[in-house]
Every structure is written in structure tokens, then in C-alpha cells.
Image (cartoon, rainbow, N blue to C red):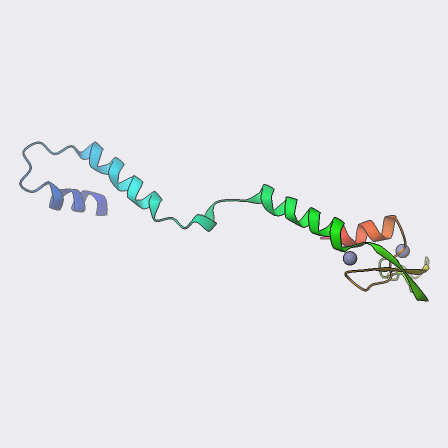
Length: 105
Ligand SMILES: [Zn+2]
Ligand SMILES: [Zn+2]
């Protein structure tokens, strides 16, 4: 409805209005006004987060032994570890727990 009204206004004084052309032009103008950040950038975000994980998160040997953060919610299977994630400062078993803690959703 809005498009038709705008078309009528613009077509005043024109002998042979081309409605199809006008609509196409209007669509292009609308698309131009869309902000860039609405475009999906899934691939880039995943790439950078994977890089950050590899760079900053690694196990370092701590002087104190504590319950593994990943295992501690399981009362039947408490595991203590000397290893801490460098970036998270959280006690985590090497291997499985370390991986699961950083890939949790
Ligand atoms: Zn970490
Ligand atoms: Zn663990």
C-alpha cells in the first residue's frame, strides 16, 4: 500500500510510468539501508574463538591440589588435580575434563 502511494506521487506528470522499475529501485534503496552487522558472520567468529582457545587456554601445573571443576558435580567420582587452566584459573584434569570444560554450552 505504501509503495503504491509513493509510486502515485512520483508518477504525477510522467506520461508512461514504469511501476516495475520503480519497485526494483525502491528495493535496492531499502537493501542499502540495512546495517552491515545483520549479515551472518558465523565462520569468522568460530575461527577466532578457536584460535583464542588454543593460544590462551592451556594446563599449567599448580602447587596445590584441588577438586577438578569439571568432575566436582559428580559426588561419586571426585577427582583431584594439580593442573589449572592458565586463562580460567580453574582446576581441571588433563585431557577430557579440560576439553569438556571449554566446550560446554
Ligand atoms: Zn580455560
Ligand atoms: Zn576432572
